[in-house]
Length: 386
Image 1: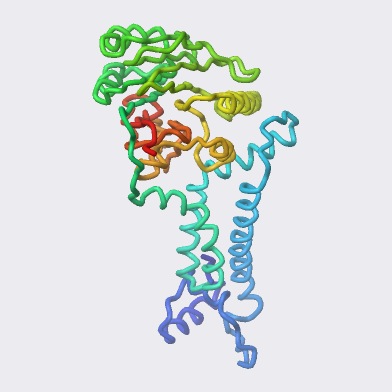
Image 2: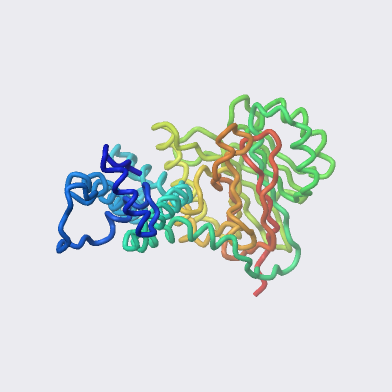
């Protein structure tokens, strides 16, 4: 990690080799972590003299600073209040910082895992033990999703829902159409729905999904909803959430004689200040909508948040659960996809199908999403068997 100084290097490394211990960076950090016996007389060339020992002390202190910083960051991320209804710069900025830490918790965990490997190689056992809790918090939820689990039974007819953010400028229209046809959804939500997408998809989808409403836009906030089942009443399109101007959709279908309310959602991405504020306003509006519903509810779309933060926790309080947490296997990442070098990094799941307490899921998977920066999500849902 830090090379020996000058003429001390040869003698220090030779002494380590004679003792049967590995020389080099890890050996240096190991000596910094092991206790030093003060009763042994120090020779003039002893690498444990204060001057030679200083770089290793710095390395050890830096390691403990990383451990302590991870505790502080994770504590902040998990206990800091989101205060979605506040638009003051302080609360918006701090809530956004906590949001981003939890959004990329898996990535923090991977970095901590690499750090733990270095610590283990250096035999700093106390530091390694101290690193375990942050690793559990950051990697534990993803590992839990990789375990097989049983799913509740569906009573009556199931409903297959698909949500697909097409990407406005995606040239692979035929690949997207082929994937939609292969999924055979009963309810289909399409985001970033432009005139070009409508020209390609509408004639092909209309025969099997004859009930449809479209909001065609040239920007990234057009959307369409297609259904095999007839709508109950007229879908609300566009539907506004909060003061943000981007449209959403609300539609109702009847499943097994019971009404099911479907919200198609595309919240603002949290990458600019005004978008961060808009996303929070939209989410407050969505929470109010869900609270006011008296029928079973499905929320589908591109939410631009993961299941690990305050947004998803607020939905769980209202009884909403991601179908992937019920019936999926694996992390189920949906973004980034076909996004250059970013696609090679661990992704995040920001596209969801949430279901209310009356509903459950028997199947949840992630598609391919040819040409799009998002992978579609597909879930087979139905009323929970009592």
